[in-house]
Length: 128
Image (cartoon, rainbow, N blue to C red):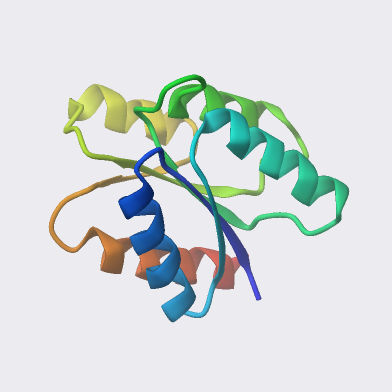
């Protein structure tokens, strides 16, 4: 089963995402911030149980999503991780382009974002 790491500082969003991803047949873990995301990626790599994908909030205290995305894309052991950037703030075309530069996907926390994320992750991890 493909593993997905959910990174969001909002406990309600984390819970919704994990449940939605598990319902979609994915193995989902969650952490509450960027620093913990990097630690989880390290542990998963060391245990030879890497994550196939990550749902990453951008606006977080301590280490933000942009810093996590930069670390993921600069580490050859993590470059395979598909990243869906999730944000509650419409950040405009500049941020969408920035996510695209990192080979990520951009999803806003609105409407049916849970269904969009679940469907996208199923496709991404099945294609990998």
